[in-house]
Length: 268
Image (tube, rainbow, N blue to C red; front, side, top):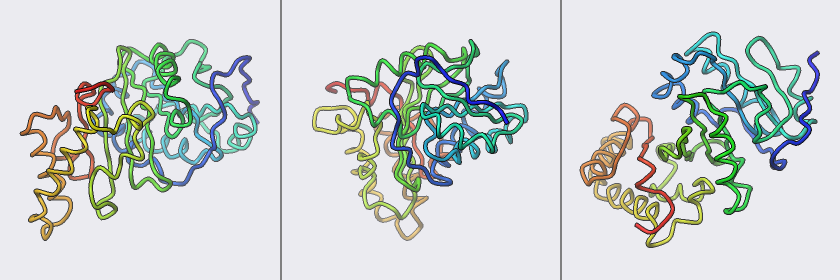
């Protein structure tokens, strides 16, 4: 059996470790969908599941989903807690492995295409996340993305910030139809960079408020289903000038992605 790789100085803290099967399906669907070109074109198809938690199920699911995009993908699950790494080792296979580490990413100089860290940074202070962002950004492949996200316990409400080597690119929101009255209910699952910014005067508050207004204005479409209503809401946001980066094919999934400048911290 492979040995646990030990880092002399893992960067970060052990998280609560809560995880459930299929919890991260929404972000995985995004990575295997509109972001799949990054993996297909990569010289080294390396992906990291950073802080996968008490059970490695999300790392296994990520590997299986991305293997449909590129068969030679390599997923490495990284955890600070050595006990969690030891528990995951029996699930290792060709293309899927586990090792101890943190935000320093113990990859022996290799540069990942994707680093997915879900429900990790939300457990840190608001004054800490940017330094971890920068550390991971510096380790990415040229076309790589760092995905800092948060979701509820079973993945019905999910948000994530995507960052490339230069900085934050976008905020994505993905919600299960029928599981909310207003889109702004997702605010409690915003990433650390935004969760305390949902107050009047902040850009993210203005964005969520605009979503709520457009959602209410599309109420007459309710008999046609929430998918149609959500898509019409997104179209209205785009018509109003919000820089949405995706298309109706994503909106129909209960997902919408907006450019980072429209929601970044700071008064609008």
